[in-house]
Length: 75
Image 1 (cartoon, rainbow, N blue to C red):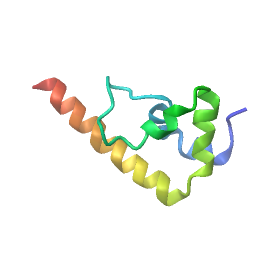
Image 2 (cartoon, rainbow, N blue to C red):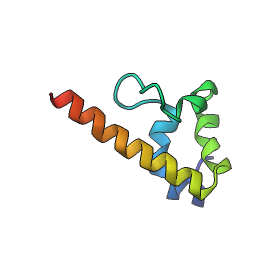
Image 3 (cartoon, rainbow, N blue to C red):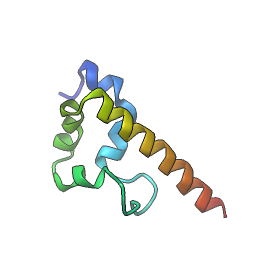
Image 4 (spheres, rainbow, N blue to C red):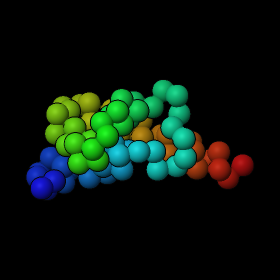
């Protein structure tokens, strides 16, 4: 159902498309907009509608946010 080349290539973005993996999202989290969709499968399928550039920007944000949150948890 979900497996296609684009979803497999962007599997690292599945978790943030479903929800924040570390507690509450930050206020400027771009993934919040995707969470308005209540069906998890449809949330994931939104990856297919994004350009490679948009996905890369989301990936950069997610990686930076995760690192920041981990740093905050260690303090």
